[in-house]
Image (cartoon, rainbow, N blue to C red; front, side, top):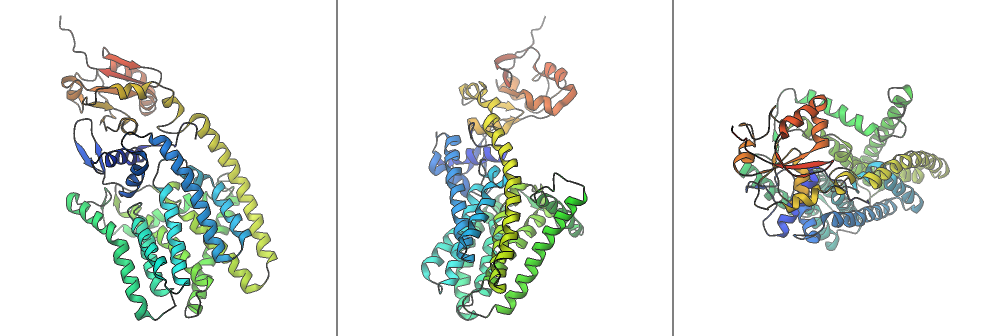
Length: 498
C-alpha cells in the first residue's frame, strides 16, 4: 500500500471518531460549524480499537496500514488453525488458507480502512473458542474467552449479532457433553453477557434518536417480495466469486458454473443437516455437528443481510464488502465436508484430487485479478488516499486553514478524513456565483468567511457535460486561496457596486 489503505466515507467516520475518542470527546464527528454529532451509523468498538494505536495526532494512514497487515496475517493463521483442528489434515488447511489469502475481495478488505479487517479475525477466534469449549468438557477458561470475544463482535459490526446468536443456540443443541438442564445455565450466561454491550448501545441509540445503526425499519406486506429480490441480488454478487462466471457472463458456461456451485452447497447443507440429527446424541462431538454449525452461520448471515436490505431505510448495500465474512465460512464448510467424506468413505484420493484441481483453478483466476488490483493500489492508490490527492497540495492547504473556520465542500468525507472536521456538504450548486444567493451553505460562505473546498474531478464527474460552464459560474470572481489540478479553496469576495 504505497499510498495508504483505501478510504471512503465510512473510513472517514471511523478515523474521525477514533481521533475524538483519543482526545476524550467520545465517539463523535465534529462539524466545522461547531456542532458535534454522535457516531450512530456504526458500532463503537472499531474506532475505539484504532484510537488505542493512533492517539489524537497519530498518522492513521500508517497505523491502519500496519494493523491491517497484522490482522490479515492473524486471520490466515486462525483460519488454518480452525480448519486443521477440524479436518486433522494440514494439506487441506494450507490449500484453504491459500484460497482465502489470494481471494481478490479478501485483499481488498485488508487493504482498506474498514471494520471488517477486525471483525473477520474476531469471528474466527470466536468459532475456535466455541469448538474448544464444547470439545474440552466445558472448561471455564475457553468459556470466559468465548464470552469476551463474543461480546466484542456485535459492537464491531452489527452482523456479529447473528454469529453470537448461533453460538448461543449451538451451546444448547450441539454441545452434547451434558444434559440440557446442565447446559442451560452456561448458555444463558453466555447469552446475557455476550449481548450486554450491544443491548446497552442499541438502547442508547433508540432512546436518543429512535433509530438503530442510523436506520429505521419498515415492515409492510411487500416485505416477502422485497426479501426475494434482495436474495437474488445477494446471489448475483456471490456468484461472481466463482471463477470465470464474470468472464462468461450471460453464457451457458456462467449459468452452469453458478448452478454447480449452488447445488454443491445445497447438497452440503442437506447432508450435514441429516447427519447432524442422526448423530447429535453421540459423544464426542462429531464433524457433522461442526459442519452443521458453520452451515447455519452461513444461512443466518445471508438471512440477516437479506432482511436488513429489505426492511431498513436507508438500505444497506449488498456488495462484496458487506458479505465478505461469508467467504471464510464457505471455505470452512467445504473443507469440513471434504474431510467428512474422506472419513466416511475411506477413499482419500478422489475427493482430494478434485479439491486440489478446483483450488488450482480458483488460485490462478484470483491471482490474475489480485495482481491487477494490487498494481492499481500500489501505483495510483484508491479513494481518499489515492496518488492524485496525496501528491496534491490540497491536504496541507486544508490543514493550514484556521481551525475555527467553517468549511464547505463537495467531497465532505475527504475533508473529514484528513482534517477531522466535517464540512457543510454541497452537491447541487446554484447556477450563479456561490455566495450571492440563499441556497444551502451560501450564508456561511458570504457572511461567516467560510472556505469553499472544491474537488474538481468529483465536480466534473457529477455534472458531466455542463460541469465546465457551471464551474465557471460558481467560482466567478471568488478569491482563490489555493488551486491545483485536483482541487481549489475559495473565499467570498463581495461584488463591487458601481
